[in-house]
Every structure is written in structure tokens, then in C-alpha cells.
Length: 131
Image (cartoon, rainbow, N blue to C red; front, side, top):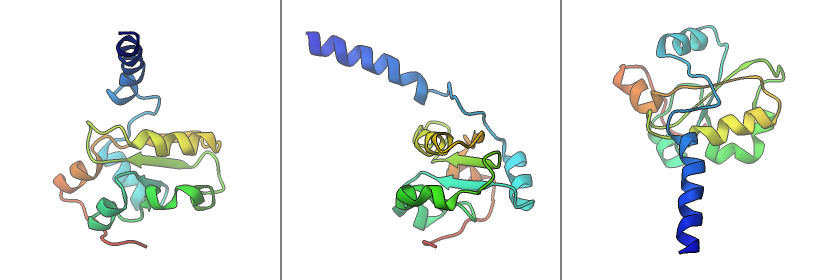
């Protein structure tokens, strides 16, 4: 019973992080499109390498494959826009990349909640394969 109570308590503590109450502000599709057009964003795809290879937002970094090298792939300017995304608004995996960027000192870290599914649904271009 003690284990069950501990698991329940842990679930209650962790759930808000994946239920939309994010420490990272959201960026909208039009805002992201504008930042991409201005070449003013670093994108972190947190969907996993297999998904990344099937389709990702152009210019995005495969966070799963590059996690160990992420510091060298992010801009030198710590106030630069860094956007993490995963599959859709119900996916909380983006938080790992956002937290990694924040831990490295980045102060303008945002979340694209529509994810790759929302990007594709909006008929936006995708790149396929690894870089």
C-alpha cells in the first residue's frame, strides 16, 4: 500500500509538467513562421530520430541524436530564441530539450505546442532524413 501511495503522489507531482502547465511560453504557428523566415530561431525536435527522419520542421535539430552535443549546436547568444517541439499538444517530451537549453543558460526558450503534427496539418514544409 505504501508503494501505491508513493506512486500516486509522484504521479500527481509530475502530471502538471505534461498537462499544459508549462514553464516555457508557447509560440504560435505565425510567430514561428516569422522567426524561421527571419532565421531567428533554433528548433529542437524531440520526437526521436525515427520520427525526425520521417519529417521535421526545416532546420530543426534532432535533439534525441544530438543531446550530448547540444551545447555546441545552440547559438552563442544566450538570449537567442530556442523553440522545442514534439508531436502535438498532448506530448510533453519537448520539456527535456527546453530544460536542457535553459540549463545551458538560454533565456528565450519557448514551446511550439502544435508540434510536427500541427505543422504538417497547416500544410507547412517538412524536411526528411538526418542532417
